[in-house]
Image 1 (cartoon, rainbow, N blue to C red):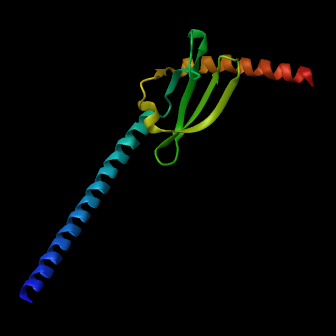
Image 2 (image 1 turned 120 degrees about the vertical axis):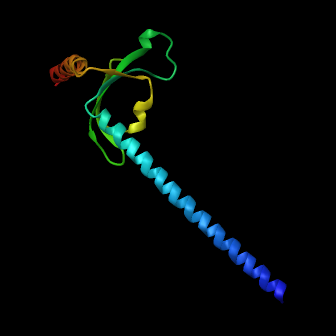
Image 3 (image 1 turned 90 degrees about the vertical axis):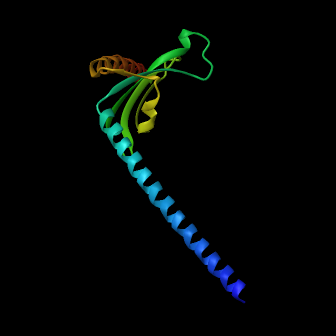
Length: 143
């Protein structure tokens, strides 16, 4: 009987110790998440207003002609450490794309994004707009 009580007592202590360890792990994970959130918040603040270009292509480019520039501007904070962006591109087939999108902050950790000036971004957007205007003119002629 004494041995049985002792085993129960030992088991209770082991369970209590395990619960303490689980609680400590939980607290450390919460602290780690707070640190990550702070780092992402700092990254996010530094991105706002920045413009980038990215050498884009479809899956298996065979030559330089298969590449084009994708431009993106980081405009404002989004939800959950995302950033609201405006991007545009004209692909190798001449198709044009303009979109608003939310990007994760970590998207810009990729060294493939090249930081450019707002002036360059606006200059390229003006060229892009001319392309869109030309397409609109072509469409209205057909109507």
